[in-house]
Structure formats: structure tokens, C-alpha cells
Image (tube, rainbow, N blue to C red):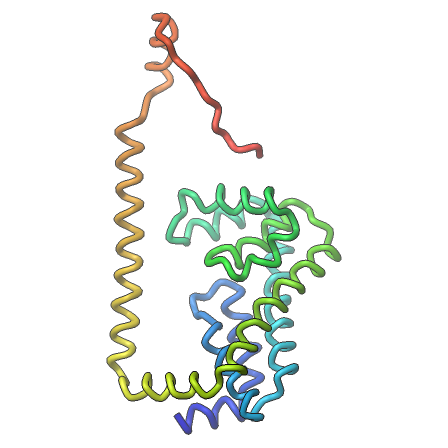
Length: 230
């Protein structure tokens, strides 16, 4: 614990910038624990609270601007790429587009609090050709709300976080094993859910030829167009 605190005290600001940027660019390394730790260190006057929050916001904004530019230039190709590597590729594009259409630019404020949406929202804003200054303002507000809330939580509960970290270090390698097992269980459950969903679609499928025959036979058929507005 002492070595960890010493490392964060000497390299805390650099770690915050690199870690937050890496997570927001799409790497599976959650930065919420790091923001909590930065807040806890700020609570014990080892780091500056405004500087830690400001650097986290700037790192998030930098990565979001990259995705915004890619979305503006490449459109659906970038969105499809991000959704293809997600755990729910079948509904990823539809869900994110629905959220963005329903809430518009305001969705950028809550995007980072919604798993999977934080990385997808910036290229979606570029794809919809949101003006750059408008994107920066809303994304800045979202990054400030996200980074600020978790850093404040770490600041307020600094004593409890240090106690929890001490327990975690006592568990040692068992903590890593538990984390890996939990992650594998979650991924496996999502995979099983997706396979069941695909199986149901396969059972419920009707070909265009079958529909044509039913229509020609005068059967009482109702066709509902569920294609997305886009």
C-alpha cells in the first residue's frame, strides 16, 4: 500500500492523463478506480484536486475529439467497428443511435456514465455532423461531470478507500483470480444470451417468398415496418 501511494504521489498526474486517455480511446482498463484513488490522495493533500480533475477532463476530451473526427469522416464504418468488438453487437448500433436521436447533444453529458456509450457517443456526434464547438461544449460538460463526481467521491471517502485498498492487498493474487473469474462469467453469460437470441430469430424467420405466398393466398397478414428512421 505504501509503495502504491508513493508511486501515485510521484507520477499521479501522468498516470491520470495516460490512463483516462487510454480508457476513453477504447482500451478495457476502467479509470473509475484511478479517479477514486486520485480523489483519496487529494483528500490527504498528496495531490491537487483541481489539477487531477482538470487533467482527467482534458485527457477524456482529447480522445473524444479523435473519435469525433473519425466519425465525421468515416461515419457508420467507425460505429460498426466499435460495435463489432462489443459484447452486444446486434443491438449496439441501434441502441446508441436511438439514445442520440432521443436526447441529442445532451446525451454527451451522461454518455460516460453508461457502459459502452462513452466511446461510441463521440463518433456518433461526428457522424450526425454536430458542429465542433457544440460538441466540445457538451462533451466538456460530460467529462467534467464524470471525472468530477468520482474524484469528489474519492475525496470524501478517502479513509474508507484506503481501508478497502488495504484489504485488497491482503488478498493478493486471489483478488486477481476473483476478478478474472467474474469477468469470464460475465462474458460467458452475454455470449449465451446472444446465442439464445440468434436461435429465436432463426426459429421465427420468414422468407420473402413465404410472405409473398401468404399475401397472394389472401391470408390476414399485417406487415409492420420496424426499420430505423435512419
